[in-house]
Length: 556
Image (tube, helix red, strand yellow):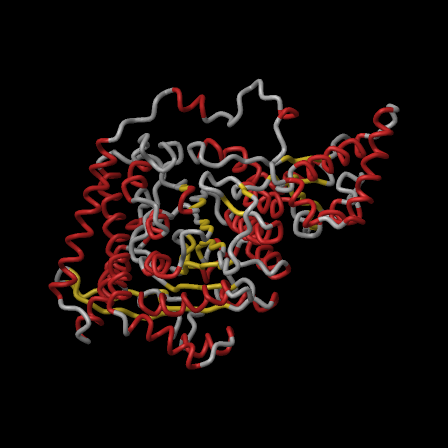
């Protein structure tokens, strides 16, 4: 495929000639070859993934309904935005419907999902009720976040849909932390109860949950991608990186700012396989995507799925795309690059569906979208008291020293800390307490004592630091990894933003991370993550606490 492809067509009775930029890096290898070569599948296994879609009318109908629901919902959002019922920033997904269709087909409720600011359709495909999403966009009390999140911040605890994040690529380390929480559950033999609190019940033996994170191919050029791949590979995290590749970073051609747009190949350095699929063929995305998901579920490690697609709309409704020479290009895309039209043409031509069947489905879906708008329109605004309620999850007079330890603490410690390790850490703690009673304890030792007391009191407490196993600079994390293991006490790369972000993902999934900074000044590398951590409780409408403690040495 060449970089530039000329497109000729009649537009309003005028012959138009213009140039369309298509990614020069689009993979010319078939899905079959990629799955065999990169993922180690046999041809028979690849054929089965294809047959599971092509030979199953119900599966194809599921894909089609997801396509139509995504398109119909986004069209309705645009209409409501133009009427002034949706305000602020909003980013639509028209033309990229094969991604939510794949999510609907292959992703489970218990999987952790992290998206970016163009997430409406990802949330719908994950099972978040469309009415609640529309109400959130309307800033209504019945919204998924009580109206506190808005278009860019859809969260839903029951479906483990964990954002909706506004800053480009910030969601990548959060998803790594969420994937780490799955490994923590298995290591500590804990699981979520009906209230999403940790209980002393091990995940089932066939637990195959994964963490999924969405990013645009422009955002994938961010350095967080390399950090994510390194971390996911090192810890063998059950993580899928979905790269939504529409060839644009906002409006700029990605190839104008990126030397290599083959994001699906970026994992080779880390041993992470990748697959490139054509997003204009929703069935192919489902087939290849399901194979990649199953690879991750099987425990073989992280993977990348890059979906080449085309976004019909501008970056947002406020984007003056017509002033940037894109009006004709968009018209071409809607005619020639529509995944819904291609699906309809393919599966009516081969006799799987009749046109009447598909029309009936579309009518049904549009009725559902209309009902979602009506629900949002008729819902009440949040009470004024909500702003105060979302300031902080605990009352100002909360005595944290009086909080009881989890009932399962002793049982978890007994099965994860050996008797020798327990003897060593008990002696270490006793020595620190003697220093404290004598008034001779240093600040670093005092913090180290507090960390050990808390990690023993509550085994859901974790710690992240650079040079952790060696005690860092002031012995603050001394003996943590030697006592609690690498999964609870993690040595991290030298980028505070990365491991603050991972801690945030753990915090959203039932754990209580401690982050130790060698120097408080280094926290500047994690400003985006710190900001989002501070806003999480309010932005999610009180759904997600953020029990993260950050410790750092200061001074000159």
